[in-house]
Length: 158
Image 1 (cartoon, rainbow, N blue to C red):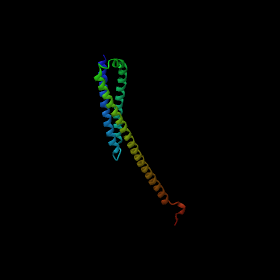
Image 2 (tube, helix red, strand yellow):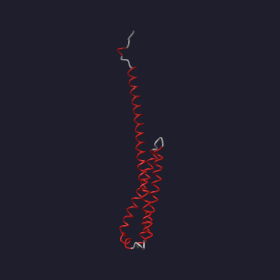
Image 3 (tube, rainbow, N blue to C red):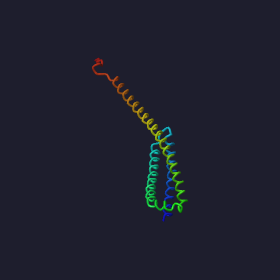
Image 4 (cartoon, one colour):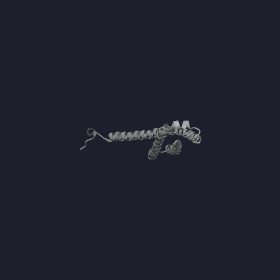
């Protein structure tokens, strides 16, 4: 009974490791998107959605793993020697997963800073465009006022 549960837990950890590889790949893609001169908002949104889907998969796997571990914890502890190889493999996978998670966190932080910088630049561009537009509109209004002559100032020759 414990052997089947351990097998399922190992498969879960292996899937989680592969999904984390996918998140690492999405982070690299996100970095490339944010590093471009012009922000491709559609590509950025798609990347964020795909990464969110991967995170949902990890959460699902984590919930199942914890529930399963709760069921077999006492059996595993009681029969450590019988499951030694599987336990060592799980420890190795957990160490890999932890390393990938730390790497993802640092990549996320780097991308967040890059995103904040990119959005700040985009806001400045919008502000400059708005300021330019307001200045142009103000100029035309002022010029229209200059070209307008009140009828009382016009010379009325007959």
